[in-house]
Amino acid sequence: MEFTELIRTRESVRSFDPLRPLPKDVIERILDAGRLAPSACNYQPWKFLVISSPAMLEKVKSSYKREWFKDAPQIIVVVGLKEMAWVRSFDGYNSIETDIAIAMTHLILAAENEGIGACWVAAYDPAILNEVLNLEVNQIVFSIMPLGYSKPGFKKNSLKRRKPLSDIVGYL
Image 1 (spheres, rainbow, N blue to C red):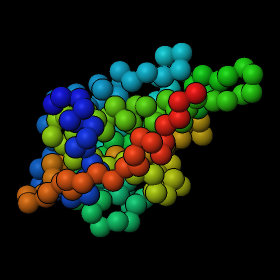
Image 2 (image 1 turned 135 degrees about the vertical axis):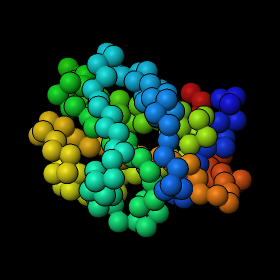
Image 3 (image 1 turned 90 degrees about the horizontal axis):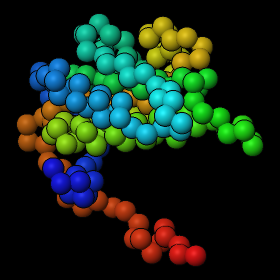
């Protein structure tokens, strides 16, 4: 898809066909887009955990109680490795959240390009995910992204509501 059209038409999908898992090659192309994302000093302080097995899906899905989430046939959990991220020497700023946000954007745009529905979810219970995924103290879940083909009949919203450029841009 042409890039401008991709970003104009992409939207969060909350309607998944639970009986249609993604082929491995499609998942790997999406993951590769995340891998290629820029990060401060190219440290790539992340791990992408692909949740596909029914047992793990059930456990991970318990961290977010929305009904639509239960239908996602796959979930990518984006884990940040804070101690591996670049830290600015002047004030101690850690780039982990910026790096993860860029990687997530790549993942979501790649999913859209593949015709796969995705949604960036941050309202999960981190304690559940930490336990279910058996994460170490230095591993932080920053987002979860359900993936899947949309349910038959799903229609995208053709009107994307965004502020006009004049409200968000300043020229100095």
